[in-house]
Image (cartoon, rainbow, N blue to C red):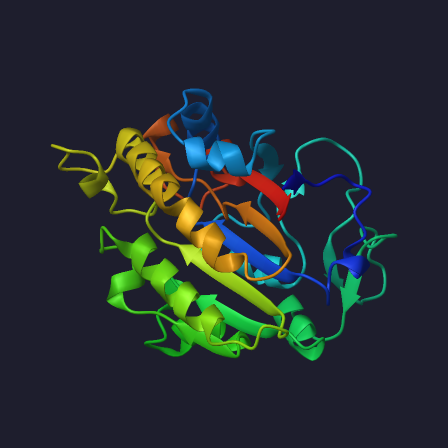
Length: 268
């Protein structure tokens, strides 16, 4: 296992490795860093031994952020400068496509990876993936295989375990030589999350952290399911959320707590 450097050539990864994008929906950067530093997310610490990287999200809520992600615009490093992207779509004028960027064909990286022979799998979580209405079909509709139920949604305290079961079953059914791109929208951190904190009747920063500890407990099982082949894994948040800071609750506002997200790249 190794964390990525800017020397990585994604053209050598795409086609030879499975790919996974695990979005810890709503995870705050400050909470992720604090929990890891305190030793309360030991499995994520093993997966990301260098710690979470601070990045800026392209969106302040799930739909906007994921539209950008699937266009090849993942969270941007917080340091100034032009940052070369790992995956991109060809269009004139892009200043972040460089040597080592894998440039795909199509309107989204999901379509581009499918054209390269990847099976594309979406395991939805929050409402924008619920398959119940036209809007809830936009993002999952990009994938050849997509799943959502209330068991994977925000109200089920075992949502992450239920999502992992789908990943295990779906990837086990693929031929060994078929490459896969797996996307999981982890819903557990999103409100409501108060049920992860004993005795809590309302969502709070503390219950948000408790939800992260729940996710951490099951990360090894997800990684095992994804490790059917050499794997390039991106784990990140799409945006943070507010619990009363500066008078704000929730997200969809350009507050630094919302726009600053944790990010990691791992080669397994």
